[in-house]
Image 1: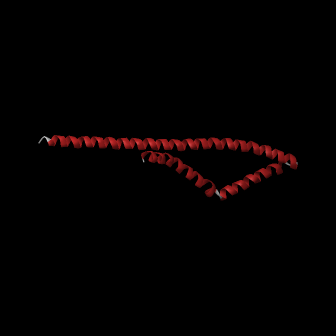
Image 2: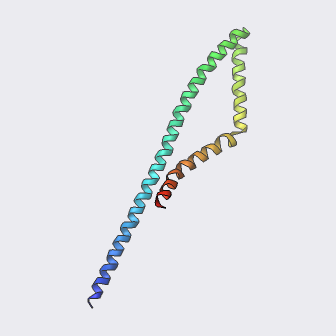
Image 3: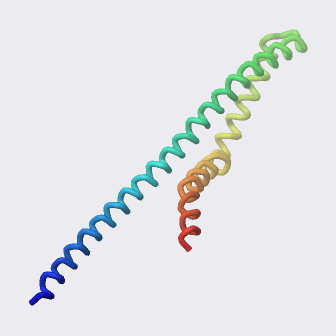
Length: 126
């Protein structure tokens, strides 16, 4: 009869440990998810900042080149028309090859970010 309270206490302790373990795993999973989301958002913010800086640099460089070509050709219309034509050509190339050039690269980068931490944790456990 004395073993009965020990058995019930054992199962109660086991239940508490199991609940604590599940709660800790959920907290760890939540923390890892927040870390990965934060890293993806950080890369997106950095990418947007770099894209804006590149855009403004290209914008002013285009004006410089437009005025330079205008002086060479003695026609502002021809100088800036050539620059506009180059932009339309780049637009057509990017539109044609957008899947191969950008979509796959972006998806691969996000997958690499999401699984980078996971593989290093798996290596530590082994």
